[in-house]
Image 1 (cartoon, rainbow, N blue to C red):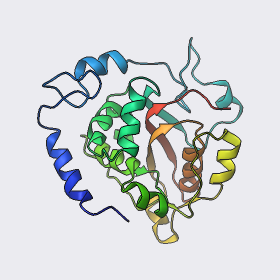
Image 2: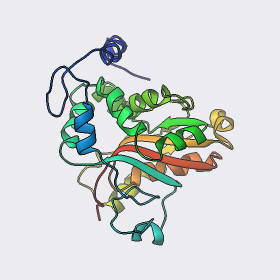
Image 3: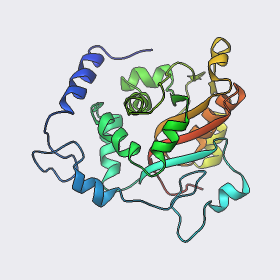
Image 4: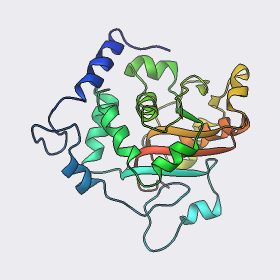
Length: 245
């Protein structure tokens, strides 16, 4: 797996800084943690969500209409926040502006989501959505893998397995595409290598990514895990957008 030179030193230093007071990325208070308690309470409150795709819901419904008609390949989904202010800026900084140190704070936010502790305790593997070699070389790190490793450090969480799921080819950027186009781009793009299928057979998997938009990427990844014998797959993401047509 490719990482830019010096990445692991940067990541080690970033993890060490999490234990020290710093400035909150949202309200900029000092001294604080990367996401202070007040901002987490204000901007990451509990939200009723579809149990299958984590889409925000109103009323007493447990599932959205789309999942009732055609449920995704994963069994459940959990999201810490809605994709919007102030989280969109923090996630874009994490993903595109060389800020791997945000992984710890974002994973903590996700681990505190209602249902997350139970899901982590019930699972036997944590698997991040992989990037293509080209995207990994361009970005320097896989943000989903950093989140997955940070989640695995929580008490009661299973081990993180970054090599079980692989991306077989590079695909165009998915942003701006409708769901049908995304599904077409991602058809057959993920696989569990034959020599690793025994490690997935019969396992309960937490599938980790940073943002869930249409669900096409997580759906394709879950299909590959299902074909390898996973018996339950729970998608966990930091943020959930509104549904894209």
